[in-house]
Length: 187
Image (cartoon, rainbow, N blue to C red):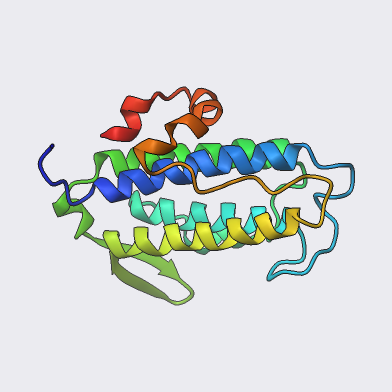
């Protein structure tokens, strides 16, 4: 058994996020014409709006974690992408950035204070708290997309098979899509 690593859970959650997004976007790519943007019942009115929201919030927080100054510019356009393929590419890019951040995370940097640019003020939070918030946000809204898919021609995919070793038999396609292997997930 390896020594306890207090930031390992953040790496695992970043991997989970990227893997779940691959699976979710693959399901969305199978939607029939009009289903992606169709009005639905949820916090955001469509799958397109919800996926765009996840992306812009990821931009906002990942940039802050990286020490950037994007701030509220992340939200200048509510739905920056109309096409799923472009939205998928952008989400994969920010997912890679989040994975890289979490792979470099150490206990000291997890406790580092992050400046988050808000309207007229700077919010100051510990990096580990920002990460916990971000992972919760992603899971929450992916769940909404999952529920909205139930009202489409596409069955909602299983989205919780990425954390534990026993799930390896379910995540091969997603690992290949990301160019990862099982050893990456076990670190």
